[in-house]
Length: 465
Image (cartoon, rainbow, N blue to C red; front, top):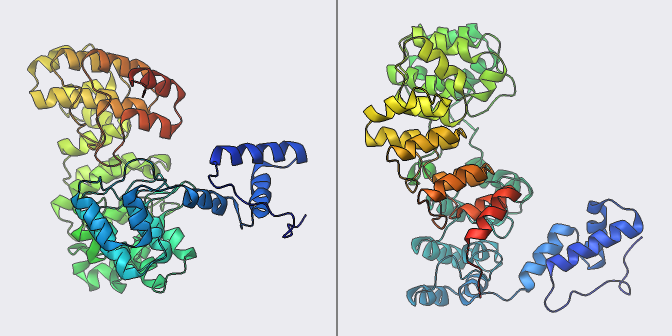
């Protein structure tokens, strides 16, 4: 059924998303439609192309905070004045989408948007806030310009962050209408390799073409020594970036996942490179990547690659052990223990070896006791966590891995009420924001859809008058 001018609805002055959702559900029930089809029809009745556009129109109709309104209007002077007066860079909570997002999504000039974004980031705005259903980087990727995307990345926006529809900024850029769309796509696509020799070598590695790989390494020995450099803007960002400017050898782990299927002869591929001289540091880091590689484990290559690397002289560092345990990859660490790796309090805590843990904790340094708590919480080992707390671990110290979060965030994200009860009983706070998203544990529980954790934490949060 088409929507004509006479049947088209007008949004009320203050539209409600909840009301529209109820309308869509009622329409789906009355017309025997799927919910998505009912949402689409309702959007058409309001004169919009789809449900996402309808939701955005509702957001635009809501009154904004003074800073959000100034950012949306492109009023650079007002934004600077409000920040000088003490207005919080992320807004006062009434906006659907922070002032930073408002500026990126605004239709004002690029010059004004850039100036406002720079002022907000300098004032401490969080570029990862996704209260608008997407982060500021998504809005910038869709509209450009390239300089705005670059400024957000330098300001520690996450190029891999997904929006409410599961799309990363790269996907949004590909569907966008920026004047410099091609340049934005090239910047956001971290899989691109500019150097043709490196590109060919990576392709040979990922295909398992040992002969081609050996030929290229022999022709250009630099391929084993130099880094594959990505865009300069990522090196200007202050946050640590996983797999930034990688070495060729690191690709054997498929971590991050850059190929759907690893070649069955990946050990031979690794040996081909090792025979031509891989630096010790690269052996060690590749070992960490392999130990934390889910694709390598799922394809039955993890343990054989670990054996290959260890035979070549790779050494598991304390960081690699922590990273492996924090990603629930216990089998590689057990293999290292079987080969003579000394048991530590942190390892015992992660495995839940409570018979060994008390003695290990008595001999452990304060740092090791803290690591034991963190890895116990991450691995959902309640008794281990209790023992680490008994030994003096502080529940309000950020984790040794996933170090942007506290034990309470981890437990909330796991829907682990029993762990949270233990932590709270030992003095854990539930009001400290994490360092990446700025969320408290309750926010983590809500975001993850964890009903038990949410109900528990809501009882701890004083209700607003």
